[in-house]
Image 1 (cartoon, rainbow, N blue to C red):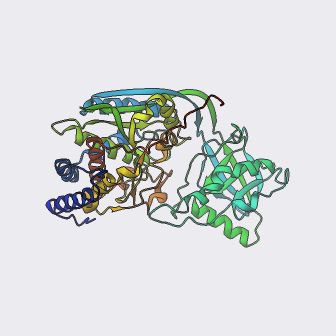
Image 2: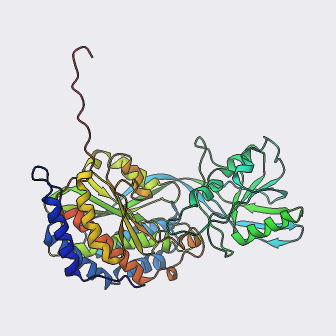
Image 3: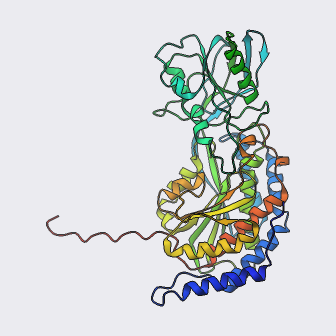
Length: 485
């Protein structure tokens, strides 16, 4: 893909002119600015990143040497070991693992087939949190056109049956719009099926592809309870087939046998890389991705790419003659796929120092090109974010909203505690073709697009760590108490 890069000298001139004009607006309270030498270094980082294979080398190593990395599994442990070796082989000042405990769910084995009106194997996968079946379940199928149709099912009315929730085919979009609604049946469908007394639940995969690759993913618990019945997602073509049979008035039956289930408490952990700031080592600019993956593919797009993008961006900054003023921290979060467990553990373990986390963001939406920068910072810091936007604009990235909360899934627990965020939005047009499927493999990553991501992250993170600006929204001063209170 061509990004139509503007000459760096022209970009720097535009930035300096705009920041100088902004500074002249107010002599009493001038807006934050970015020094010319910082802008120049950030632009040089972009050039370096676009001509580097470091990011692709990292994701190739992770997906090949470790492979799938189910949260809590032995494979995720090997991924942490891999992460430590990676950090120690690069230029980071500190490399550590921060452990936490978690419940472990294992996929086990699955057999699923249509048995009436004829025999046909179906392509399915157990959803995270699915219950087990000691013996094969042979039962008639009750068809539900959508999650909304099963929400009103009467208690006990599905006894001895297998429920099937269909749904609309998920529309492709750059932003991934539609995932939330489509994902509703995966999250809570089991609760309605169990209330109805169903022996098992089958749903249409939450994905935008037309391949016979089922999409896995985690369900939601209810009052800390999980499904006791098998909950299976079948591929979109198989769901289409079941719909057609239903529309023809055919009576359907299935056989389901799943050995998925919970296996007790295990240890997971977050891998942390630090570049210690030269002037303000206690102030942290945090970036990262999640190290675990679902186990159907090799987790290249979700989220080996994010691990590679953020690690490579920090490493390119580490190779500069001097460390930035603030500490840059890369966190490879554990157990994201099963409920942001690593992110929650990080926020708890670092609760006393989150006020020193000056900015945070994550790469966790594949490896497509970045097209937009959004932020949620102190209004007085927006000129710096705007300047970052102008530096990365030649990469084909537009400046978006300045009051957009988020930063990425693993950033949510920190953002809820007041940590400011930015987000580099990627083109997710094909993300939900691959998401949580056997098709999430290294060949789906385009090296040039990965390099564009690294270039944008390197520039953003360097400027944020080198510029003395307060990104955090200022809290109102508490009112003075009186003796009568």
